[in-house]
Image (cartoon, rainbow, N blue to C red; front, side, top):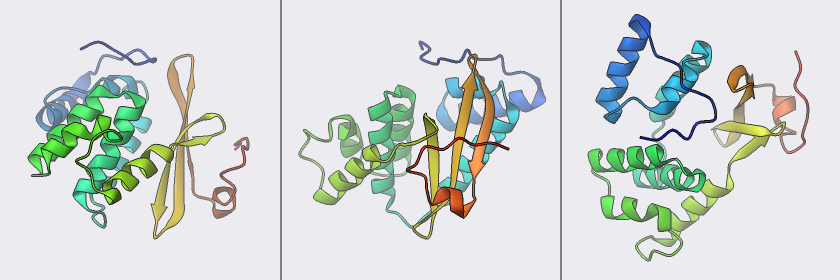
Length: 180
């Protein structure tokens, strides 16, 4: 597998690293490149893994729609591992793999319903930027609850900001410098 990361992967070592590699191999069939990249900063890695576990518990959305949205964004940003993972999860969860295979071409394909098309279009339009960098937005009960943003300097993750202040979240469309 060729590397597409801008940040060089670190060697995953130690007991925690061995457990993590074993877990990811069981879950994904291989150790994702992102794990080696995030290994540079363990708090960021643990935050990301925790966030993923919490998001996996969300169950208000139809699983097919969630899968299509995730895969549409993965296709948009060119993450082949993410697409493979989405297809793998769709297959294992009994979702329609024929449709999952068509997600990268969803605009031209005729296998999707109008609702599925709306979900994928919305997912592609939702990437967030905060202070000139990518950010993840977490909504709770239809309201913005948290925004997390990574700062990368010299090819390493140096800071992570998790914003929960309602006053700052209310003006997310304005570019503003964050400070401590």
